[in-house]
Length: 55
Image 1 (tube, one colour):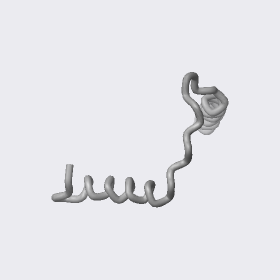
Image 2: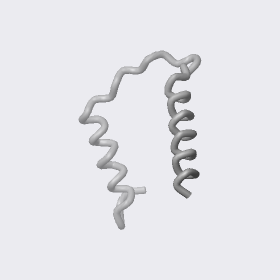
Image 3: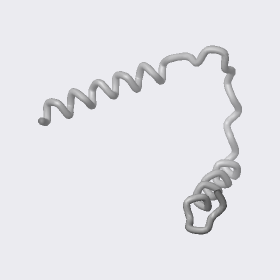
Image 4: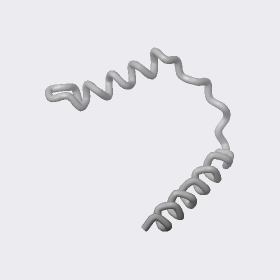
């Protein structure tokens, strides 16, 4: 079983590297989001999953 797991890990790693190296056609580089904006998104997501939270 260890051999299968390591083979799966190698295949997944190789696929991940290929996907990372691929260029996305038709999309320019986007500006990174601010930390405050990312925190706001996380907080909004947390609220959606709390009982009685907004949906």
